[in-house]
Structures are given as C-alpha cells and as structure tokens.
Length: 257
Image 1: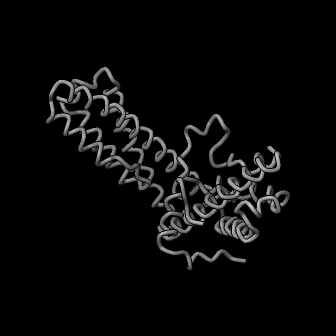
Image 2: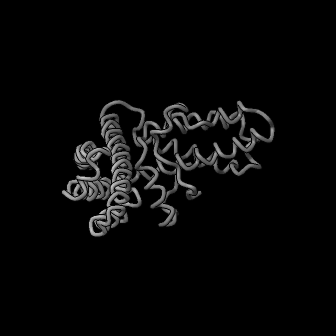
Image 3: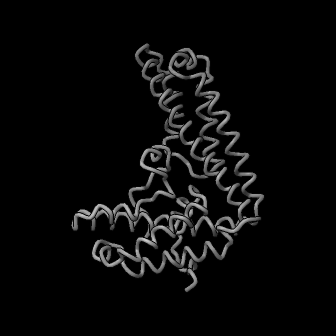
C-alpha cells in the first residue's frame, strides 16, 4: 500500500529529514532492496527481537515510494541523485573539516591557557562552544566552518597552531564551506524544495528501518549462533564495506520508529 507520511509526528518527521539528508536515494533504494531480500529468508527470526511484519511492510512501502519518485531510472531523476550525492559528499567533508579544526583549536587553547593568555583562550572557547554540535543543514554547517576559520586566522591563535595543522585546517575549512554552499545551491535547483524534502523523508524512513532490522538481526544471530543472519542485514549500501565505515555519517543513539 502507498506509504502514508501525513500522520508522522513533527518531531519524528524532523528526525527522518535529518537522517535522510545524509544519504543519496539511490543508496537507500539499494539498501531497502537488500534488507527486504534478507527479510524473505529471515523475517520470522527477527520477530521477537524488535522487527516485526508491520516494520517489513513499511520498509517495502518506502522502497516502492522511492521507485515511484523515479529513483533508479536514468535521466532527470538520475541527475538529481548525482546532485544529491555531491551534497552528501560535501556534508561529510564539511563535518570532517570541522572535527579537525576543533581538534587543532583545542590544542591551541591548552597552549594559550598554559601561557596565561586567558583572553585568547576564551576566544577559542567561545568558538568551540558555538560549533560543539555538527549541523546537517549545509548553510548552518558552512557558518560553523567560517567561525572556526576566522578564529584560526587570528594572529594570537595562528602563533600557537601554526605547527599543529593550523594552516592546513584554514585552507580546508574555506574549501569545505564553499563546497557546501555550492552543493546546496545546485541541489535546490533540481526540482522543487517540496519534492526534495519528500525524498529526504523517505530516505530517513528507509535508513531508520534498515538500521532497526540490522539490530534485530544481530540479536537473533547471537541467540541462534547464525552469523550469516546478521551478515544478510549489514548496511553495505549506506556505509560501504567494514573498512569504509570510518568515513560514514554517524548513527544516532536513537531514531524514530
């Protein structure tokens, strides 16, 4: 049956959108297909570990909604997902640049505090506080990168981070912020904002359900001593192989069900 998103509570909707923005719809479609294929074989084993028949049906409906939206077809839809993939890549790099810059600034603040330069250390502390949580909105993340870059470029701060990766961090932050804004602008130009948000919502639902199925599969695999059961539900289309997962978006501790 068609996926009904109208009844989703506002808080859950925002969480699905937050998650969905981090993934391209081609990847979520492929993951949905993989998880559904595994469910054909292992669904009964997952039932008492948190993933039931209704969850599987909802995942199937979400997969069908992606197909109905044109995901998986060539042409305009394919171009949009190329654009979306660029957005996802820019978001990942922006978050990585943010993490590196914050590490450099933490070290610089420690040095300044040891030297008794409380004023400069406080400037860094304010910037770290303003950027303590990574943003999934491209412009908000770009603003965070600008904030970190501005502090790193201060003469009093540059002196203590020069040999700690400061110059490279400044360059990387500038490039990442520009890429985020360019990717967001290109993404907005592909179709309507409503259509983009709808796909992000479905992507978020698929990712959340696939993660839930994997958790249930791991619990079932431990109980039944069937490692193949857990392997069948791995999120390879979302996070790549095991060796690639260090570059993947972090999974939240909880998500709407």
